[in-house]
Image (tube, rainbow, N blue to C red; front, side, top):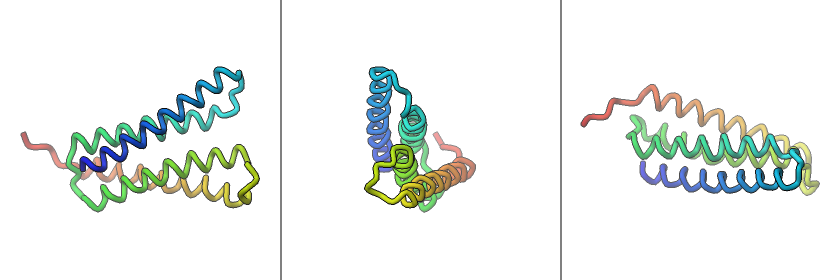
Length: 130
């Protein structure tokens, strides 16, 4: 489970850096147009992934398959939701709008599954023996 912890920790660090850069940009420019994206990157990407990294460092999940589903849906969902949200808001023009919307929605749905998997893991958790 240490590998899961390391993966989630590194990804949360990347999200934290991106969120801080966006916050600095907003402060410097005086424009808060990216505020929703900034908030989701920090809450979903940095805070949530970090807390799940700590979980995998401290606990031994009761179900390995459920843990694997959780971690990979967390990675795909957090990138999909925040990336899809950015594409949806900025409409860069190199992708069809339907695809931008689909990435946003699918990323959010996958992330929602990740939260469900984590909830199941938490309730299936066996007490640690000392």
